[in-house]
Amino acid sequence: MKSKQAFFQQTVAFIASVHSMHYEMTKTMPLHGLTSLQYELLEFLAVEQPLTPSRISECKGISMPNTSRELRKLTEMGLCERLSDATDRRKQYIRLTASGEKYMADAFAHMQAELWRQLEDVDDSGLEQIAEAMALLQEKVFRGK
Image: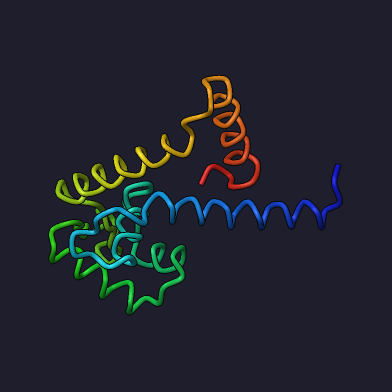
């Protein structure tokens, strides 16, 4: 096995590559009046919802006041909604509305087309290998998150 330092460097390079690929998949996507931050919040909700505002703030590295402001704007646009916890009314959850789900379905369709363009030269066997590698990364490195 590589040294732990080499493994760490490879991990950092991989994460940077993932961010770069995400940028490539979304750079030509029409945002329809949303800021890039608002889009990122919707994307996060689409993948893992419902979420508390504090979880969104923590995971996206945004202050709570900024998170609250952006979530309020997204709620006013009809793309997400707040729900109260059934057992603790003080606890709020955020989830996408039907309009938010539609917006993200369109966004993911755009991203999927970009992904297939990137992978057009990869055969079914290669796609299977990539899928297995991603599953292993999810299980061992990202802990299923």
